[in-house]
Amino acid sequence: MENTFDFFVGTWDSVHRRRREPLTGSDEWYEFAGYTRCWNIFDGLGNIDEVVFPDQGFSGATLRLYNADRDEWSLYWANSKLGLGLPPNVGRFDDTGIGTFLCEEDFRGTPIICRYRWSDITADSARWEQAFSTDRGETWETNWIAEFRRTS
Image (cartoon, rainbow, N blue to C red):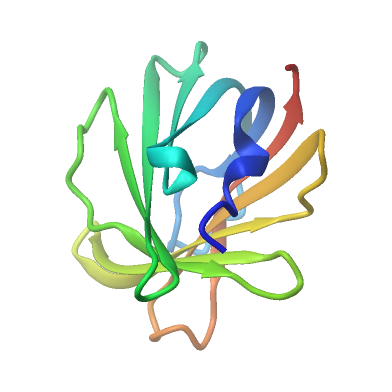
């Protein structure tokens, strides 16, 4: 299971949709482009991607590290506006190929669980979603969706 992020190695174009005001009841979204390059480290036991959002004025990076003893990944997100300030999202891929990664954090003064989900993975495409839960995972509000298309 340690090489489950091998699918993302390479370069990607992406279309991102973000909810303007998460956890407010608003359903207003906006769309923007992203460009990602990803590579493995530690013979696949680690993975790094860098994403640039030219129209949004920031870029980001994810460091993914595999813990073989626990058979899970820790995903650390940082960006050029805020740096690294959040705990890692931790989880794994299930037998159907869907990866679910969770962390507890604070969003604008509200305790939440943040969920990253990878799905619809093929050789040339993938989908990533971020969702928040304010009720310990009973319900989720998706607030960021990215559709990736491989360029190399």
